[in-house]
Image 1 (cartoon, one colour):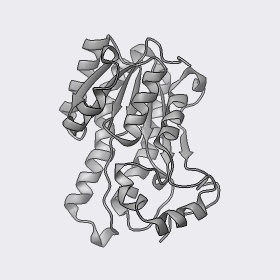
Image 2 (tube, rainbow, N blue to C red):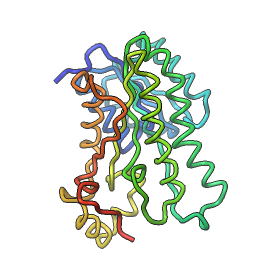
Image 3 (cartoon, one colour):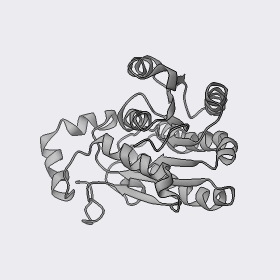
Length: 253
């Protein structure tokens, strides 16, 4: 498939995990890619193996609105426009409300919520021009709570409703806004969890298709939502969770 020929896609958190899988998926389908991440060394390393005529690397912290403005500006200067924003950069901390410091809570919200706001606001004028779309990475934690992840759950709940609100407002300009809601996915954020067989076994009991999920599978869902195949879909929180939500399961305590 080449659903994204002549399209430009900006991916945040693109140095690893779901973001890197998304960048590769869109490239495979013909897109030009702008890869943004705070980890410049890792980003440049993974981007070195990609087709350089269709890849632009940007380094910065999405919690800083200057990063968002600079990334969109560089995208337009290099590729002439922007068609799709993949709002994916995120962080997590463990702990219930009593174990979560003000500093940790503020940082999670700054990256996972305010960073998405900065990126979407900077990108929106260009997306209006191209009648483009936004796909955000939330989590099943944005659709229901789980244990000992207070700050992360709070941030992802905010993202899930951000998508609904933005979709309603942006529809008049022909811009679609959707999100994917992964569950336990094998990424850098979950490397400690993946290394614990007993925890993986508990997730397997509640995820009919098995755990942990493959980030490439999440990227495939992102590509669908961003494509013209999903032209009548907006404001959707799509669980990409190996059946966790369908089974009414919750992450183990």
